[in-house]
Length: 337
Image 1 (tube, rainbow, N blue to C red):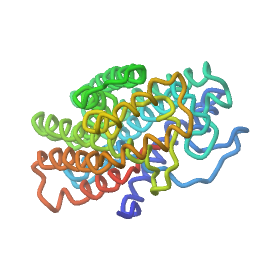
Image 2: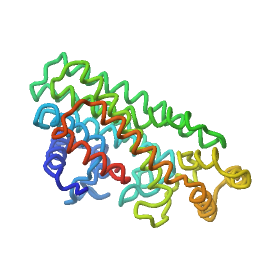
Image 3: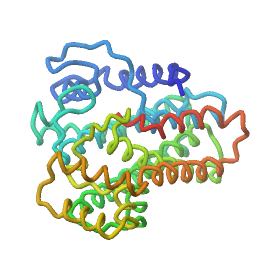
């Protein structure tokens, strides 16, 4: 699905975010501009295209589906984008990831302490930016629930991230455990994103709740697709990130542990019992996952979750088209950073 159909949304969102930064100067904001891809390490502006991200795009697409226009949702989408980037900065520290997107991570350049400070700053900016809904004529009785939704989502995603990190120290993690974790880690902010789109569109509470539920399901489906891309490569090139070496427990691995032969289960256990995994362990694990059909199962589960979520919106076919297009794009492993 060509992302070009959403180019106006992306350009408007980029302008909104840069406007938030317009009056902010000093080292912290130089560092944040670097992370956002707007400058290099020396603070020299860089002319790079906006990076599409699933959650903030969902906010705009949902608002447009409900009201016919996405512009009122731009502050909410920008707030979601800043919060998403806060999770990226902190995630790089937690995963010891030296390269984020196409550049050295903030923590790799400026150290973990400043990276934590930068992530906290992005979180605060996200919350503050939601308040800009008032500048779009959104009444206070809708702005306050939007901020509340973001706060609840941030707490839930921290709960999910805690679970994800805790799972790295466990061999046996059930499918139910995994779904609970991604429902918080990724589903919460995605559900907030769709709910904020509905709030900006001015719909009633029942529709808001339906869109929040839809977003949570889409977020879970998206996380599964990202886990698949992480294991097998975004272009089936087998290039794997540090997540497997960090013993991340994703759905394909859990499925294989639950359904493989006893010999393969024992082999996986031997790999994950090691104190430190080596790159050659990745090849062995991928081979076992392929034999178990773990990728096909995970892809089917992601599609199932997405379809369940989309069928609950009550949108007419013509209104749901862009939402389905965006979801299909995300389920190809896109839209994370």
